[in-house]
Image (cartoon, rainbow, N blue to C red; front, side):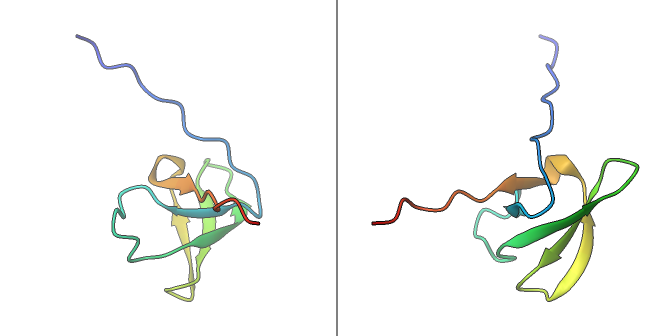
Length: 68
């Protein structure tokens, strides 16, 4: 059976994200600061206190719980 490629999620500057492969949420959350011309995103990771370049397939949107 052929593998069907998934399209990367749609992001924009200011989105709150986490790493897709970080199932224990060790790295925590980050915020998208910029998009690079080659399609990757510049993310500031709060736990690491640093900027990193991430591929769009490696990050996911954070969904916040519904508040009162």
